[in-house]
Image 1 (spheres, rainbow, N blue to C red):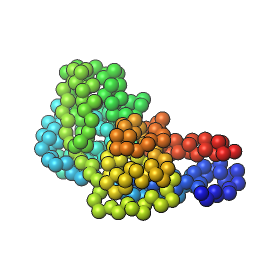
Image 2: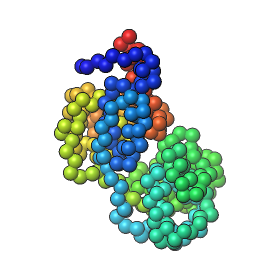
Image 3: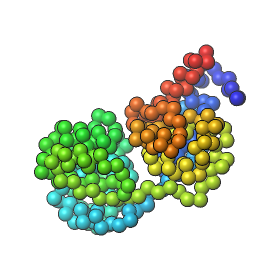
Image 4: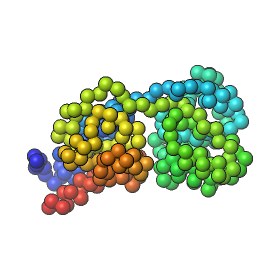
Length: 269
């Protein structure tokens, strides 16, 4: 193992120096995460394991857009969902203004919604899709309300079940698909890597289409997940998860890496 000698002031300002981190999102997502990690001293390798595609069919979302005034709430569970929804809304209805309530799963989704000129009426205190359904129904009377859930084509059903349990009428419409990126050669991508970050179950699946989980474990590469849903998928696919971010955002994931480095430094001192 190569140990980099740094001054205490440099270690404090660049807490991730000496770490080589593999990021596994879309090309756009990787660039944003890379900037945050490199600003803290990390060496970053980008591997775009997933790509965003149109849904198999536009029929459900187009029908929802046609009756968009009937919905009391529109819920988004990712920035990708916001972008895809408004792109389709503009294609189908032009620059139509919406008069409804919005709810977003977390700050990144909220920020994307604001780019389109709308503010969410609700963001859960814990940035998980399941919590969005539970907390929305706990804070608002949803009995008889019509809710549009605009999201990925393949997604967990927990949020819909929570909303329907509260008496809401839920329309679930796919606005995009997340698919593993094909043609990736990951054989040498792990050379020197100390850590891998994963931000969704689809990034787990995408990574493991080009890199074997046994190879990751044999190299003792640490695996860091943005939240428990991603961690469950990683463990199901044979990976050992070293940490789960306390705050389920990219910023929280990065701070988790900083915390793990500080613990390691303290143990070695």
